[in-house]
Amino acid sequence: MKQILAALTLCLLTACATPRQGQTVEIRAEQVLAVSLSALDSFVAFEHRRRAEVPPLVRDVAARVRLNAPKAMDSANALRLAYKGNRTAQNEASLFTALAVVDSLVGEIRVWVPATSASGPDNRVVDRLIQEAQASKTVTAQSWTVLVPVFIDLAKEIYLVVNRTREAVKQDAEWSLAEEADFAVKLAGLKTAPHWRL
Image 1 (cartoon, rainbow, N blue to C red):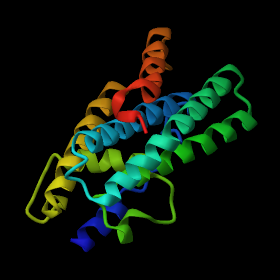
Image 2 (image 1 turned 90 degrees about the vertical axis):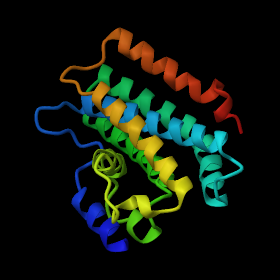
Image 3 (image 1 turned 45 degrees about the vertical axis):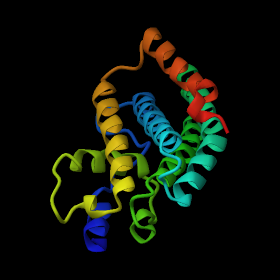
């Protein structure tokens, strides 16, 4: 199992915030923020619904996410908007730094991956999560689903949300005003939704 997860991690080495060919920094930032918000929200909602079943590790991670994610997401979004208004190298660097903080929070919710293969020298957690979500569509007896049932349910739920969000944010243009407003509403939910309360 560890070999499979280690191999999966090694195969998933694409940059988190680095734009793909033909993609702007702004579009990539929007995609990373949308997927990260969905993944973090799904994790916290799962922990809230099944608090009695999840191990202490999941409760601890959920508490940290509840404490840190709203500020990190707000900051990254504000820096994205600053970059969108003034595309300087400094604003780009600040945006990448903020996205790295968000990415590290997403890395924490991947509790179903053993610690030995969950971390590494790179900060590409959002992309790894997306690729794991894609890979989860084909389940074998040797895949990650041999893990503890609650982790399976958690991973499945997050992967479903990540896949759905990834499909929704396939884009070749920056968000419209309506899409900006929709994201702002979702971001505000981190402060108002019952499953986000500390």
